[in-house]
Image 1 (cartoon, rainbow, N blue to C red):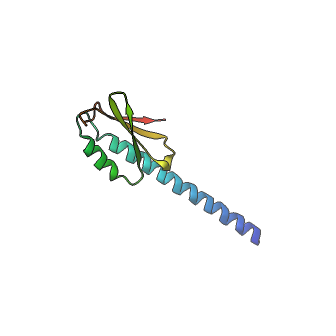
Image 2: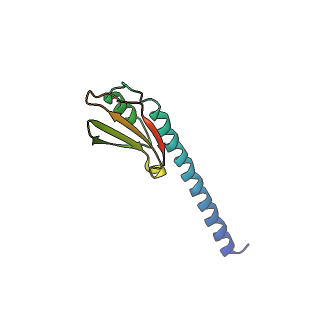
Image 3: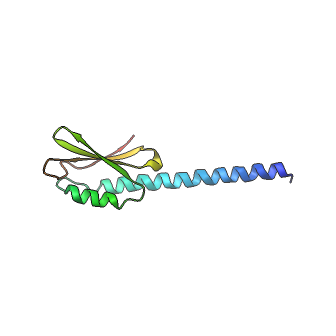
Length: 104
């Protein structure tokens, strides 16, 4: 086998491996968002929500005011925010209604 063919073969193998790793982390991040989103039912305290979110390995979250509520939006950079969880927090510091998992 000539040198150029070996280099092309190795480059192809590296590319396939890189895609496989990306897909593995993509799915891992999706599962993490979906799993944690199921924990946030109406009445759960904001502190409990934030403690659980801080345990995530692949997560990023942000809080934004939305009228009388504060909305915590959770997603992952590993899957470019394609899956997210929306958690509404009321003025009493409790989840206002069950969190919504939203594939985009």
